[in-house]
Image (cartoon, rainbow, N blue to C red; front, side):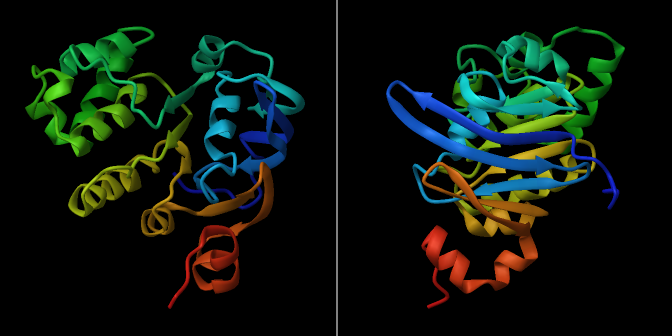
Length: 243
């Protein structure tokens, strides 16, 4: 998927505020997601990145601001309504059914089982061949990397235009992270991705645009290649130092 430099954003998050209980987590988060891009949300733990994904998906209610997907307001919709519009979500805990097989996990995820879903499944299994190999195995016996592949692949059996992925490298060995990077690089040719990722190496390999979060606010944005070169921003907001 190639980005159009004059394209309108597919997702617009504008000044959203989200509370969890009495805690004011998001305090005016704003960013846009453009066609053909992997947009990376970066920041220290507790900065509000996961809460942002959950707010987009309708799992948390926003008290202020707007979220527009393909020019349609979604910030007051229920999660299942948002999913049916074409947004998939891969939570940090993966959300797999460990007692079901790989095949059954895919079937449960299908909004509609038809020719289109089977074509998408064929494409997915080409990207993630391990899932084909373990098709009849229960998800609980998969390795950490294979479980993450299943978590990312599962929403793609539906016609999702946008995929939200939360911390895909968490707990994975370096070789598993490399395999995941290669797979996501292939996926980005077919769907837009918002990625929350603490592993800066992975984020820099995958990201086109970045947005830095600090204390529930978006404080800086740009192209990922600019952040890679900006030691001051990385040290201030990510705690990364070249030394």
